[in-house]
Amino acid sequence: MRRSVLLACTAAALAALAACATSDGEGAALDPVTDGGTIIPDAASPKEVDATPRPDASAPVWSDCNDAGWCETELPDPKLTFIDVWPFVDRAFAVAESDTLGTKVLEWTEATQAWSYVDDNSQNAYGSGQYAGKMYAPSENEVYFTTAPGIVFHGTRGSVSAPFTWESTRLPYDGPAYTDRDPGRAWSVEYPGAYVTRYAPALGVTGTSASDVYAWYGNRIFRRTSEDGGSPTWVSEFVTEDPSEAAGESFFIFNASPASSDEIWFVGGHGPSDAAKGFAGCPTLFRRTPSGYSTVLDFTYSSGSCSTKPGAIPPIFKFEVPGYGVFDVPYPAKGWATAVAPVAPGAALVIAQNDLTWFYVDTESNVARPNQVLEVKPPAALSPPLIHSVVRVDDRLLFSGHGIVFGSEIKPDAWEESLGIGTPESYEQAGKGYGALLETTSVAMNGSYLAEPLYQVRGTSAKNLWAVGNRYALHKKTP
Image (cartoon, rainbow, N blue to C red; front, side, top):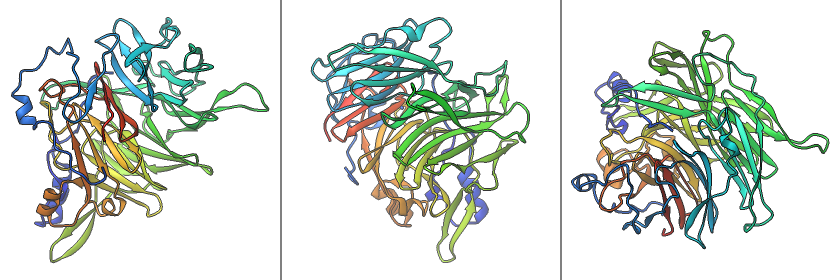
């Protein structure tokens, strides 16, 4: 696993930097489907928590809130895996999976302090619902969610006290169809201490308003469009592919994040697939504006390495050698891009390989800088921690991973210098200036760390945050 700290790379030689930046192979593994500038102490250190007996993994124990303000919410079925959550002030919607129930859609209300199912179970009809993708809710009375194979469900109701009426549409996907792989989900077998299978659904829906909604499946992005006053339909408006690439190469869109009504970011990956090891690929980043789609990050995959394609921004690491100056060193990207968050107009933070090393991308400056999160300790027996999601909530970023949630101030100027996210102590030791300050919080429950992936964190404000994943939906209402 990649254990090196980019800012700790010393000035012995530029070659040493490259070794430091790329050591130890593949990054993260996923289980099938984890106030501005303030350091919030953990409820307990990983070492202290790990010494505490853990509850039976098959039977979560419901409890009150922990010292950091995260509260467990009791689930209708203890074995639900929450894939995504979409919060409002007094309620939240979620899409989840279960081996026995299939795909389910739930609503939480503050009034009842409980989750309830709001779907009509049509999503589990024969031939659909094998797995869920990302969801979007324009309002408390309108919800979109997605299931395989490329089906978008749209629910509406007249008021919050009325039941939802659901309709579904199969996306008009006409992309590559392979006998040996699913266009809507990538997988790979990796060895981060033990063989695990890593999955990433290439399926979801997002939007900027009720009249501006997008879906993706496989290598295509669709927009909900009404022509000449007719009923809205899903129209394909972007395809990620390259006919010149090797036969059998797969292209995926994995996630999206709107920055405004005029800017939406989409991330994904492409590369070859192997029957035994699964998908191996390079990250991709696309930006949608009123002028159309542009390719920001894109690479050619060859023998385990990624080379920047013409027209895309090449990742460059800024490396300072005391007494000699600052050097720009090409940074070899690798892995799929599975999460993205806007940080400024034309700029975004991109998570690749579910790793603590990420990219700050600025289309105005035409830079892609590798950065790293420092001093985040893995609470579970995983090193480094696995990062599953990143979102922007007001003026800060929130990350979720395997048993962890943490935050950060937004500091593009520092990230353009590859200073990353860290603690004051880590920056003082590095002696190269301050990046964004890390904000830590503990999701340890019942005196034991949470040894489960938290696939998504979202919130309406610092006083209304959700972190959801395998058998857990945590709610935080304190800043």
